[in-house]
Image (cartoon, rainbow, N blue to C red; front, side):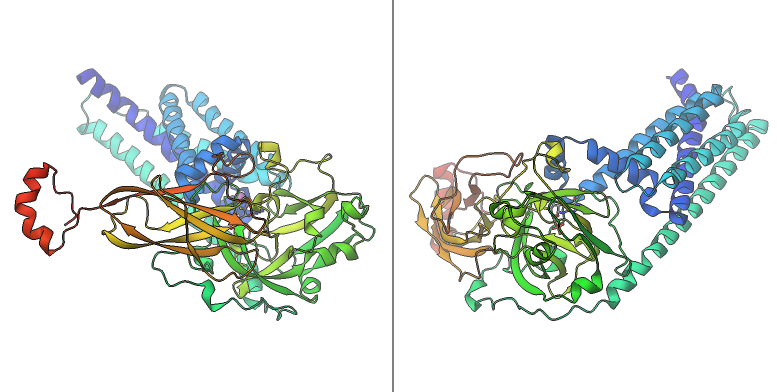
Length: 551
Ligand SMILES: Nc1nc2c(c(=O)[nH]1)N[C@H]1C(S)=C(S)[C@@H](COP(=O)(O)O)O[C@H]1N2
Ligand SMILES: [Mo]
């Protein structure tokens, strides 16, 4: 026990020196990234590399386990791993400072390599933050380890010379921590500055009026049921799914969109002004993520304003394959290096495929793709909804596999017919009697014509549908259930505009979207009306059931 204790006392300064050196390294790197390019910071580039190396199944797990906090979870994971390695290197440095410092430099090299291999890398300069960080880290380590050199080894801590040494080390440690914290904070401020031009350009952007406004949403499209998803998802509640660890902040003034590739007779590069000078359309469209589990939250409806994509493509000389066009895939590239592939045929078949600039009456939020994103009704986001788009290349499915396809997802992915129970929530305890079951159903492009609800193993019964707003939006539904006490499973299924009933067959999200029916289990407590309460004293013991009524 005491030998364990003395070992701990001996290695603790080393571990602390290691962790503080890592802190100094990250702070220096943050400062360098703030001066140069915030997206080249080591945690961001290493995180990005981890995301890209993650197979579909693990990404799927991360989304399931952490939801939209997946990026925070990744950051915490990387920092924890780094702190642990740093502590080990610090202890090693007590005896072999050179080996410890070499370890720190090795981490820096990994960061630099990750920075250079990022698809949105801005060149060799991106390696700088990691290298500067490593140098600062190695220096801090040497500085701190030197101050542990004559720390007490005989356990006589706190007395005489040992006490002075310990105070010396702690002062050095505090100074290192303070310097690192200041450098890190300064780096953040500088990074924030860099986004200011983009923020100003967004604030200054006045969206033109649509040449073709959104058709009026019928009053009956929005039901008054507590707990149901509103027909129009407020922007702040709209789901966000992307691989960007730092949200790209693009200055609208310098943004360009290039259209080129196979069969593009007239390639061109557009500015935002040129795009906005074109006739705009406004449409209510439900966007759905392929990673949405049955009953999941990654779907939402917004009012999008944008430039019809088909017109732009036709002007560039592009023809759909059915009219002899040479390209069947449009690959969209974003400022952050993402690639998404959409079928040219569907983009030009008359649906409202657009380059969106507005969401719910405002310029796109940065997180949703400012200044311009693609949007195609009826296709999952990963094959259509490129945010921060900067490039559209016409090619073929045979010639190029975009980002998600290389990770096991399908090349083509139309949205599957789905329905979701919003209320009651799973494991809710609604009172016996009439209960309003309600939710939304979607089958973009085909529309929803019927929703049915089943209680336990009973028959399917028709739900009441809200008024339809169009084939590209979800549709609310409600069902009056006369709930009897006990546990019950509520299940929903939808029928789309082609007459096809939502499949019962369960599939995972990989490779082309989850199928199967959403069920919710609820418990309806035994009735506690006045008569039951009167009888309570005598009935409870005879049934032998514990009283499970809440409150
Ligand atoms: N640049 C970029 N665009 C992207 C993605 C991405 O990771 N990077 N993710 C796609 C996916 S998988 C979906 S579901 C939608 C989500 O759009 P939202 O975040 O605005 O809801 O964006 C798509 N566009
Ligand atoms: Mo997605």
